[in-house]
Image (cartoon, rainbow, N blue to C red; front, side):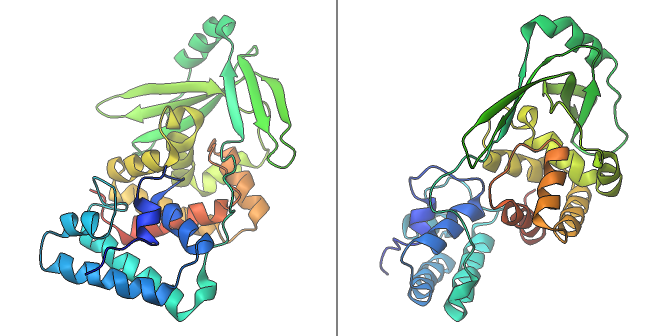
Length: 291
């Protein structure tokens, strides 16, 4: 059996991870010179060897997957069989590649910078922060404060211009374990989209997920890929099913509305291919076991 060098090894070798594991593979399938039928046949050699031995060891060595854990879910066999299905899809119809930008681009366009001088304002706002009803592991609320707490910074992806606006709105990420605690705070967008309350009422689970895990304070020091894996492992299956159903409904809207909702929910992951990123989240929840 020959060693697989493309596209799986390119996607999961030594390169830096992209926004999610599906993104890693799809970028290679879109932009590298890949013969899907040939690569599928080579991958099936890996699968045959894996079935006869240690699945994880064979996929990592012969498949050149430089990951301690499966790129998706908790089963090496489930993930490896999905790769076969994806390569087969492209072998049957090469047009089913995903439209992804060739060059790296910023995915984080917004940042909130707290003013240290506003510490007392922030503390008083936190003391009065309401705890939303619900069963999510994390939640995200925005609190109006009586005085500015910092700057809302926005990057224009097209021009590269950066705008800074003073804001009196505070983003708060809450975590539920045996109690509810504040996980982090950040300066939120200065002005709320007037449609936000209606969107939150329509898609409450998605709002909690996007704000709780992918806001500035939700991400913390983690990249989106690690944050999403943590969400999938820590949120209940019932909660994730609701997130997937609500995200699928959101994706029936146009691109501008989808982006507006994601921003309104506090999510700071905004790639140009936001629709694909959300769609992969829906697929990931339904296809793999994460617990």
